[in-house]
Length: 490
Image 1 (tube, one colour):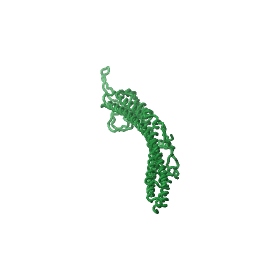
Image 2 (cartoon, helix red, strand yellow):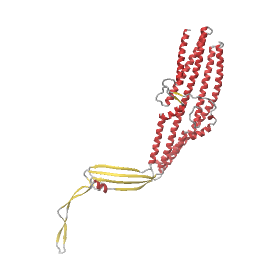
Image 3 (cartoon, rainbow, N blue to C red):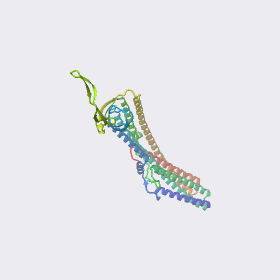
Image 4 (cartoon, rainbow, N blue to C red):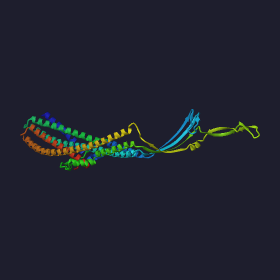
């Protein structure tokens, strides 16, 4: 019995440690605990701070930029050009149309503007397509937020499940501990065999191990939930334990078709697929626009300077030059001379050239597609394929939503029935255990039968707990599809 007493002390110590751990976890009395989170606070925090949500919002901003750019593409395009260059060797000067053979400096300045007047409405359809893409991107963000909310609710309920499981197994361990103490007294008094005490003690060890498993699972589920929230630190993280009751849920009054009818009009994944279908329709119209001629208006202004543009600088009279002979009326001949001049040249002034070389242009340009390697037809063909693919994607999203609702509704109904059945089972098993406990106390039931009765109660309570939280989760999902906020306070 000395070893037995030693094991008892060890068991008592383990029990005290387990109870202390449960108290710290359930009530958040650790020194680092600062906040008890509700489900609504968890969801709101995640939607505000989650990195995936922030990343999706950047994609929305990118779609906004695409839409703005497609609108700005309707405005005229204006471009300016300037150049400063030197030419070596023989070249034809663009302003004098003469050969220049020495190093020549040139400057050119131009301004061009153009606007598309008609291109088969491709730009207008592009704007409408980008508007639809933006709306689809916004719905994708809402879908991600919905998924994040459901995911958080799942792990929130998982934490609640393990909290309740820890409470149940702690109570079971307390009952077993009382029996261990009683058996020790009976064995010491010689009224019970030591084997019965060992059997109860072994049961205590099994239940203690089960409690530790539940506590570990509780810690892991709390860690997982806190990581979903992207908290900088998980120390002291705990959640509120609302009063959860099971009753016929209003969401089960409506049949799956009614829930689906509402959900397909409000769920973001359906709206996003609808917007993308409309966008692919605009893409098809945009591709067909490449069959039409393009009419554009453009104008330009330009001027420049050339170092080869020369003007006379000085004129010096030269010697008269004989150019021929003439006969006067008397019949005698005389010589005819002409004046000559020597010229020196200089480069025409930069400002004068800029002014003199000024030129403007304006024109209408019509481009008629005749043959472009079948590119337009290929674009239209691919756009048609994309349109059909978008139609199928919309149907797939609707089908998936319908299946999810049907499955959740059926699971909720089944879980409710299982809960009621497990409740009856728990009540009956609890009464059976109480009767077995009384028989064991008076010594007319052995420890093996007593442990079996206790195991039956433990299994029944665990089963009831499982069906309870399964029902709560399924009805929470159905409520969500009915447009109700995630809330466990029903």
